[in-house]
Image (cartoon, rainbow, N blue to C red; front, side, top):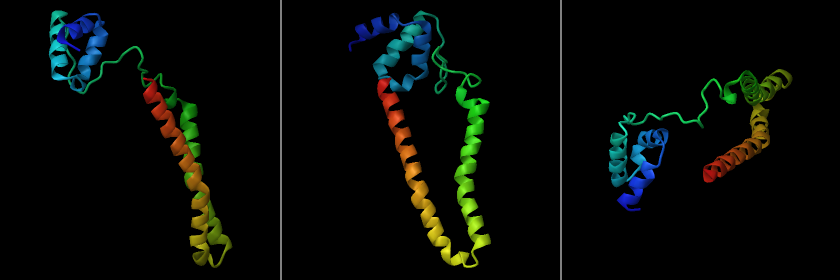
Length: 138
């Protein structure tokens, strides 16, 4: 894209779009950075400091983010109790019920790994797939 066409693109952007672009200035080629600076000066806009993002209308405040509401926190706590409590419960049962628990402990740990590892592997795979799909759709 030549400089004239890029200047026209920046000229038609809103102030918020230009400020958001200026916040991520490092992602631009040097020519685009120069044109962006000239357009910001023409509009008397002050570019934000590097590394600081300008919130857009699409961003969600921390208080509005559903991931930080009480049900999500309770679900996270329950999941952690399950993840760490289940193996711990098996170890406690093995120690209290089996006098030869030291001999059977490796088999118990291996059994837990064979049961839990595929579950966590599927969760990891599905999460990465969703993240990649969302990244491609942007």
